[in-house]
Picture 1 (cartoon, rainbow, N blue to C red):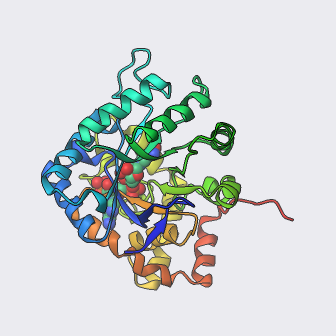
Picture 2: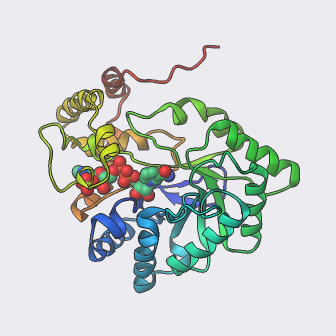
Picture 3: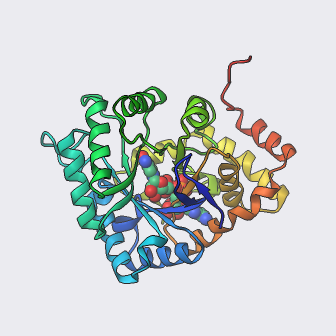
Length: 327
Ligand code: NDP
């Protein structure tokens, strides 16, 4: 395993980490979740990603029970939560980034995860109806109280992150350290364009999500529709439609050809492509089976296959490189 600094903070995160969205407390049994965490930890993964909304709190409950049972040294791993969506309830103040919901969300996540503190605490989305200043103060205070160690954002845009930094600087508060954006061969703009200034001048770290675009970049949807997958889960039609969009399948076919020529699996090639970006601090893996996770853990060995020539071939297939202004 390789470890990278989370931006310019002091914390080191394994470059591959394990997430729980749609799997823990939903698609897989608790026994499989435990096996996944053991496989991850033994493979050198030190970061486990979670959120209050995942399976409406159940994902954190499952992960908390496993952490308690396995009793790993608390200093040997990082666990996250994300606040914004609540548990899916819709009364006023049960979601968002107000001081009330952020504090209550933190307390509830601590209980579900059965830990004394959360290592990485994310604002899961921007809250257009709460002043960013209120959220920055709240996160700073939670750090001062020892309830969280680092805070960050997810799917915020560059100007929102920048505003949080400016407020933190103005009041001598602790600024956000990391952002959690989607990043994969289909979604590149934030990592490769919008955030470049934040990487260079504000030391932003990233914990990127959906590196396989929900499994499409494993190649398994290129010939038919396997039944035991996440996009077959009832109520996830939006994900299915996005995942199986024609242009994605076409590009995936081209990536598969390159993987075949290199003699590597498409999964490993797609994950290695994410790992190659130095602005990625950690690639959060999702897996519903232990065999998948074991394969994904081998992707680090494939980064060396991504020569300039191979990257050009991939670029040709994707044809979506963000355009940067010329100087
Ligand atoms: P991926 O895009 O990598 O999708 C993971 C899914 O792909 C697996 O559950 C599995 O689905 C399939 N898969 C994984 N490995 C293989 C393999 N070797 N062969 C075949 N299929 C495979 O990541 P996720 O979308 O799960 O995102 C990762 C994590 O990021 C989440 O768990 C969560 O922690 C975080 N996240 C954060 C978000 C945010 O807004 N901040 C949003 C979404 C995710 P299947 O069961 O179908 O086979």
